[in-house]
Image (cartoon, rainbow, N blue to C red):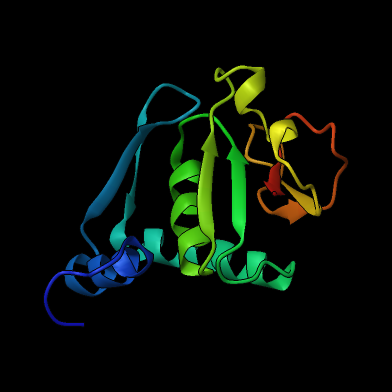
Length: 137
């Protein structure tokens, strides 16, 4: 890919090709130390999330509301949603009731993306009352 990417949907591919082994993310680990992820790892995680969303039936242009704290998994999910051709609707846990996924006009399906410590990462079906979920509105 030449030049700068024209959309965020291809940003991770572009940065992976250009900066591959260089550090893309730096974040605190549970033990208080620091961890890093390369642009290559960021791209791989974003593709994995994008494939999972497509496997769950997310179509291009569909809105995906993501309720999550700011953490590396948020970044992977952000770029994964875009890679799947969907539209990211960020909903922060502190946003309040009016911004919650329950305020979506049409609830068609939902999936949970478990990223909390002690849980497996990945997606699985859950119910509409799940406090940590990815929903399509």
